[in-house]
Length: 232
Image 1: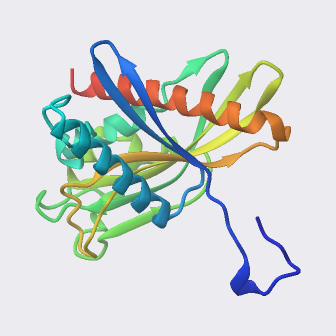
Image 2: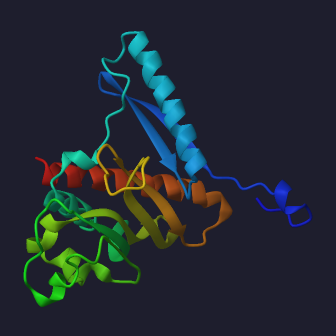
């Protein structure tokens, strides 16, 4: 919350978030939910979940202190793009996909030479990373043509969804990405899949948290279904 009566150095910015512990059958699930989070919040979430994991392993409740995650290395280049795109297949009365916004790809230098085709060969030897910003980008050939998928990493994508939860209706923008990278090179090995709500239609103050939770649940369901679809 910003207070313009104070000096800038005294300003406070609040990033809401929560960590949920849920019983799931005979096991325990830990969920970390974020809304427009910061890098510092990510570090705090990781520290808390890491401490929880160590505690439950020390008590013999779990066999591993590491939470289950979706990793960059779980996919081939083609599978990774298909996984991202499968997140756009959501089409329910209360939550449905509208369009792809921004996305970011990185050329896989170990994937061999690009095809000798005019619309893509210009990248050879010149382009390492492409960031495309706009709207309704799902039909751009980089996402639409499977024969090219093997040549690059899709590491980030934003998507817009429409929601209708009771009287609360509107759009939300969700960013999907592989995060946790510690170096500046193009090696994303070991990074984990994550998502965050980056934009939300204006709502009544008392409804925001419930809508955010509902959106997070829908995205989690879409994420799990997408992974099972690509990696059955």
